[in-house]
Length: 68
Image (cartoon, rainbow, N blue to C red; front, side, top):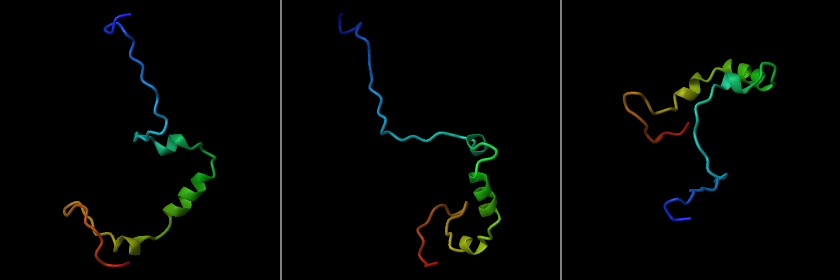
């Protein structure tokens, strides 16, 4: 077979990671224990933790300069 008619074959790289959009609600079934954890974590008051975050829509990402 000529070089021009040769079939192109690419091996799968199973180690490659990729990003994809996914709906978390659809990935976890309705009665899965992870949903109880989501519910618990969603009720935690983390407002003090937000004081340490030094990035904003206006300022963009910045390295933290103060300890929390």
